[in-house]
Image 1 (cartoon, rainbow, N blue to C red):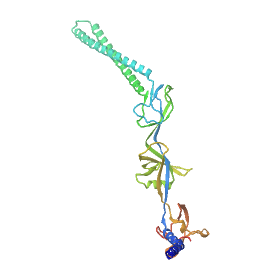
Image 2 (image 1 turned 135 degrees about the vertical axis):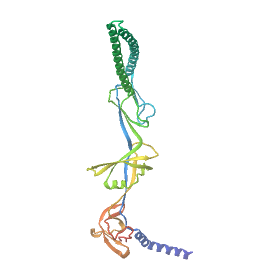
Image 3 (image 1 turned 180 degrees about the horizontal axis):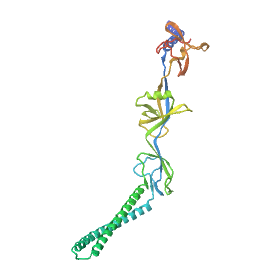
Image 4 (image 1 turned 120 degrees about the vertical axis):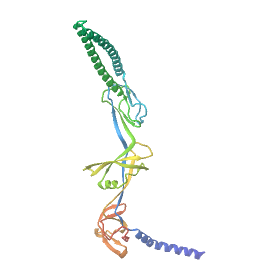
Length: 342
């Protein structure tokens, strides 16, 4: 039993002694040159694809505002304005049109009678049975009736235009917006009197959410390498997006370009302020060197290639997640194994 314990004790001592060497050897095997690239996460926040301020096109008192803030629009109109006076105008105009229709029929009947009278007098005049003055009076009465009919028809056309205009204006007393839009701000309350141009409410369309972003030139290049649609996360949940537009105007202050993503496939809550993230791989000049392989003595950094123990001077460009970006060198190709800096 004592011999057994002694054997285990010796084994443990050997393991403790050799572990640092084994670890160093394994770490060295992992110190390899990697392709130059930088993975970044670009994030932004959702907002509505369309936001509209609804304004009154007629004057009047607000009868009903059928939705509260946050409610999506359904079958009911957004706003109803009292139409009492325009309804009176429409009714009066229709009454005038009815009267004109009656008058026109009466004149047409009169013209039919006077036309027959004129034909009878004209036949008698040709037979020298009546004086020319009677024939001329009949012709004059017929002509006057025709002028009266023309005047009545012109008046009717004018009244019909007035009715069409009133009917069109009447539709503006009931304000409808597309189904599914959400009320984001109420600007009036029922009972308020509004004038033409008064802002009534703000509505937004969240059926398609968009994400405004500001990106660098390198990030924009990375976006353009993606497929037409690509994976993103919305509050950590998977979704599909596409590039909606890219503004070519360069912002001198932040040195970035403005672009917008559209979320085209997302099964979740749709509103503003949801965090959207997309992973991009940026292409950069140079290669990635593990920090453990870099010797920084005398501010003249070098790495040592394991095969042949060749030392290579490098120029550090950047540092990404524990790796250094160094200038490209034909001797430091991706996959080259390096020695540790110890």
